Length: 405
Image (cartoon, rainbow, N blue to C red):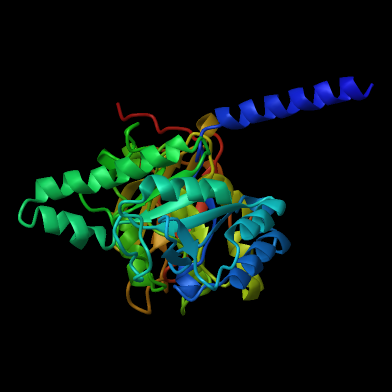
């Protein structure tokens, strides 16, 4: 009986391993938390454990947030054999990974192809294979690879006046780390962070580079103007996103700075429409109930995680209003209406929705995902919302307008 049980258990493990290996990495946009926006490089083992615990206790893990990503500031020096060591704030990276994995979560780390990271810590230049195997041994599931000092160390040093050659050198850096990660036989999400330079969406998905996501812009900050600027720069990039490869407009600032409740809601909705990675950047252990409610709004998360993986496009912009649409699995449609007015009086008068510009028939029902109400969409209907807010709608059976005779 024990032999039969052992055989069944072994077969189950083998089947599970094969099923896991067959599951594509980042089939939907990665969800989790990143330490940088709140802790910068002052992060510690205790901070990361607290974040992991908060992901569980807040319900965020069960809503899909599984990656616990340590950004810059964990690195120490290399030993006599060149093996990277964590610094004193991270006394045992393997034990930290085990702690995170035991809670049904995954561990992410940060490095740079240069000699130093953005914060001046030890980078991976010349140690790509060594570092990749070190990460795999620790149990790392995600790597953010930030260009940083590689610009000066290699790109400008070797090709000071040759942009084409600099681009080749940059792509080569990501190609080397991808090969090193692949050689570990561990599925590790590969996040390219090079600020959208040289249109990474055009080259980062190649099998020799293997990018699962790539930054499309410079860094985000917790101000509406910056969030709006980044969001609008995603127009025109929808064709490059899909299962396993995503445009990355940077981490979430929900709950940070002086963003209003409306701005937090609009920010989260926009990233969901963009099929963007949802990487919370706030202090999870001390977030307000309002912040938690936004981050765990499952019907909005479902838009981001829709299996079709098709990024939203901007349907039209008119004055204070921007309207974006996103096709969903099964023929459904997500429709986001943003009030982007810049002055404090924006939103004091209703805006009007043009269904004809969307190619939709008047009179169809839609589900308002933030108010949890069913609304009937009609041509020219007034939309009243405060400045920098959003109306996010799901239309399960959109009906196209008949073309004029």
